[in-house]
Image (tube, one colour):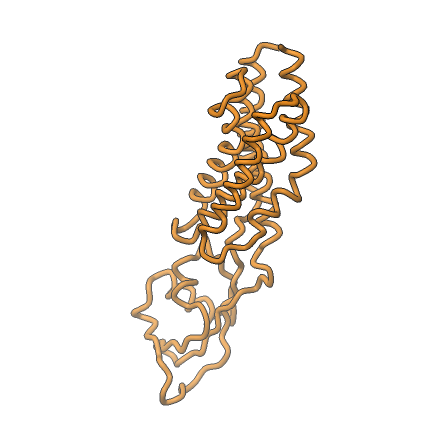
Length: 251
């Protein structure tokens, strides 16, 4: 097969996987919140009372719905402004009365497992895109090998940035560490198949860089590093071996 066609197939598959994952799965940081009326009536004398008319419009509309229905669900992404205003326990005065409203998470794990699945699939798509660039170049040097983990990092960062209501809620070091770690098994499989010491060194450096980036973050979970290695470990090594075999057959 022509290298350009093969590269285009990898890229097209990667983009398809990224699109499906972004459209169907929720980001790791997104949570479902429940806002509900706990009680109504005169608040304690030392309580801080918020006037509903002075709330931002999204929060004011949410308060109206909570009072009308008794409770409602919110997303920390889609309803970011309302959640940030109402999160926790709030005494809110309306024209009718003072309502004690509680807004707390309905997700015990915060959508953790779905988020890990989403990021893993995004990383796979990014690696496929990087593999397309690698196969198009038809050589193993630092610029082409780094395309594998770089594809995962760029895909994870860009897709999560597009989905987030504000960039400040994204754990950038965590996403970078996740993407780098996702590329390590593929590079390892490639090195094993080609018996290439140089590619093995690149895989090791990528792994160390993933750890270093994770440590830069403020108390980030080790899951950013472990999840891609566990979920994508064996499949990644197998894919890297297959890509290396294709390269050996072509040469």
